[in-house]
Length: 220
Image (cartoon, rainbow, N blue to C red):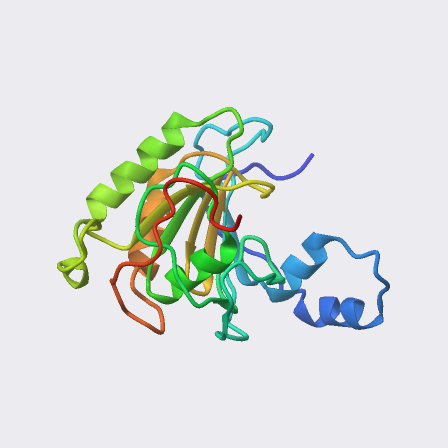
């Protein structure tokens, strides 16, 4: 039986040198998690005691950094392979997603460009719906307040994007440039802390309108 869980953060040992060797010498049978671990640095886990969301059996908050290896622009809707999912840096489309709440998934290339502009992307992976997650997002965004850089923006008071996501390892996701947060339950305290630490901390500190695809497909 393992040690009892508490809310103390645990720094996971760096596996980067070992994983680099595996990637260099392994075959094509590697899993996506191998690639994720190879680019995720300073991985921290905490167990704040919030209610886990099924199928999770405990609430685990995980954060990590993902240093940007590249920042080049690609044609909108072209294929980009990110070494970690969800991505928190890397190449991206030449157009960014506007700072809005979306009902449909936004392609990563648009979101990563928004991160480069200092945005926080709040994602949820809940096929059956999760109103408590959306409520927590709304509370965190409201608590953060308006952004003076967005004074001239026609529809956004701050640089936040809320969007559904799919195929991720946790139902609650927050992304900033070079930083990521996932949780298997709703913990407003740690989510708000992540937002306040990383909001606006990006190479291009901008709040200007981007693409707002509210109807139809982003990449038909």
